[in-house]
Length: 503
Image (tube, rainbow, N blue to C red; front, side, top):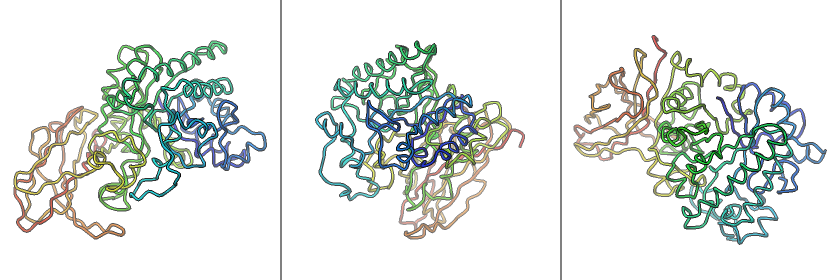
């Protein structure tokens, strides 16, 4: 099962009907089973709405002024091509520049989870986009009945207006949904999800169709629970057709989808892991580059997609959902190949590239996701911090998830060490077995607007005796220290590249 979910950006930029048609044409090349596009963010609706507030200040306004409904036209073209359409609704979107506040939101600040500082862009931290200054005014408390009713009214309007196949509730952008204590208020959100399910059942009965209800959610089940999202109750009650757990700002190769498969086992709810379309956070150590040492690893390419899909299937996933894989950005490069890349029968015959760039920790705050170290909270900094080795005997262990029986397929393993000394000796083990370096090559990194530094690439071949499906424990130990080295050795960016079977 192939699903694609995107925000409304590509559609909002259309000023002519031909652009809407071209966007649909590109989208159809994906041959997706289900396509979702943001239909509304909180109170802002991307269509002519009477239940919410129609978006303004966008290029698409020209089409609305001419009496067109670009969102509806787009849906119609996808339906003609046989693609199921499940519009996406951001339950509590946190993007909040003043121009995005609607009149209804301004009138009901008492129900908001945020505060109005009266300022805009006064923040100082690197990477902080200022959404916490004013953006929280758009995030409403779902313990308030009027908030739930306002949102339900918008969804009811959407279901009545369009020939949709269901709706998706997007909980990723973002918590909070309640005031503290949040966990104890989960029943309010369950009531809301139940109301949406009932509304879809009523709408579907009128048209002789079962309408799906999906939820895109943070991958950390405990985090969801703490924020008042009792997803187990939603599944057990039969409210959801499918659930899409994931990370909202980049993909992570260590997400435990098996926990979600276990949660949905025995129910009618399918699990479609959500893959973001960028690989790693920006500026982790090297300013201006999207991963620790750069080298283009931000590219969301075929081998990386196959590795992510292979790992998801090995954990019990029922299909794959891509998030913000925009047609205008990725359509010509990836869409035609998506079905091949998610086909489990074809994956072993192609190259896979596993890339582990951080420690598994769900990062809920996008406004802290764009600039280390000053733009992150302490726990978020830790997620991207390379491991450090300073003295003899210093060591760390890191668990990596791998998705297939290696068999006779060729595989290479490598990682990077910054500031490694000439006489430093590093011992590497995978699942307790000692790995011998096939090569240790030194390179210079010349980051923009930052001092040059040296790093080493440690590389070796792997066999089926080294790797297993599921969790693999990597241990790196400093066996001997270079006495002339004054800085700690920073270790990160672990990669496993698997070639085709028999390749």
